[in-house]
Image (tube, helix red, strand yellow):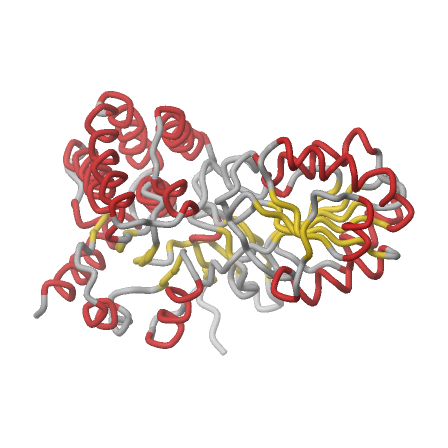
Length: 414
């Protein structure tokens, strides 16, 4: 048995223990881990410093450096996320619906854990804690494969999770970590459907395609975020400008960041110059269509590749559209089913946008940056699914369970 198979089997064995844990037992471990994130902060930041030094030396991209970096604020958020998970209802054993058949059988549909969830992710060492916390509360073991650029950070965080498990006399294999970056080893992991129940790749296009091509395990895809904000003819400018600007500038390297602004033609003369100035002041390059460039000299010419591009950088595309229908058509053609928003005071326009844009999260008069498990009250997220089957949008506790039938009888036969 190879090392990877041995770890996968240990995770499977651990999952049987976790499936029957009480809510109190799970919450104790998560609170312990939250406290360790605070007490061991210096060691975590030192591990992350090593990763950042190595990443800069290897010329890692701006977007990946931003996702890799841990700060005291982010560590506080990670700990708060765990405490939010503790405060959430335990989904395991939850009765989703119940009924009684003509034969007198009592039928319940009940949530149970998925089993073992494999996460393959790049940069973002906070995923190590978020994934463990959510998987554990939902009764699942997790098998984590982080990127080599976050090796020191991931090792430090995973060890804290194991320490919390040991303190409660629970199997450390509830969180297994794969340290090798050998592609053959990852291929081997992706064949182990006898031990692993779900695989979630979270990273760039190449990673997701690799997992899609080689996995025998069911997969939930967390693909790129080409997020739009459409500024409608009935938009309030006092809302539209800060939404569009901060949706790009607050964290330009995240998947819920605004990548393309669509502006109704009747509001373009008013809003395009203001937005372009705000973007320029914030160091954001605007790549605009011809109508945008006629209204703002600072905008550079967009090409075909700018529509549907996930920049993950201080760059935003901007286009003038003639109607709500044109905005919807653009999003359908170039969007990635991640996050899209409308700014409008018209209830009819808002409802038409909601009804016709099928992304995992649609918003009205709010930033795309709110499509986030922490911001939406899920405690944390294991990622934002752009797959429509099983889970769509931020994956919290309920999305890490499945449902089965429990049927109670009194001797009925058929």
